[in-house]
Amino acid sequence: MAYVNEIGFEEITERGIRVASEFPREIIYAGFSLGVVAAQKLAQTREGARGALLFYSCVPTSMFGSPWPAELPVQIHGMDADPYFVDGGDIEAARELVATADHAELFLYPGNQHFFADSSLPSYDANATTLLLQRVLEFLQHLDN
Image 1 (tube, rainbow, N blue to C red):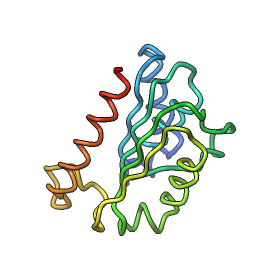
Image 2: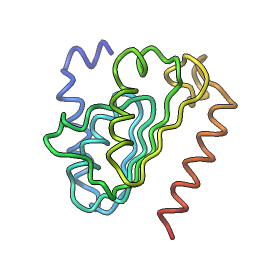
Image 3: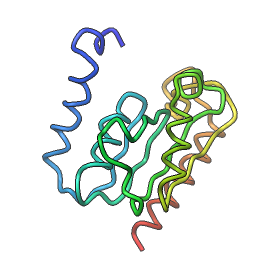
């Protein structure tokens, strides 16, 4: 976060958007924590997106000046007591997105960790990660059909 504060939140997001511009439009966007902002913005505003996977974070769709495309599938994953996800307003943004989209799911896992699916960190939760991976694979398989 020190680096983010040094170069700016907007710059981090714009870097993610610039990188994505090198890829075809018909992709599934995924973001983790701060990376969710770029992934969500691209999925929401870049024509041709096939879906979105948002991990540990979600921002209000109004942040990008247009509603979430109702037909665009999305999964949002977070822990039910993660202070960043719950106290930071992300859970409300996630619930709002799910309420407005035709194919949206919010998955809450028991616990208070932010990066719970990163096995290199002390916050890793093997049980939650197993379930998260199962749900993501089902989401991807459904998009393939």
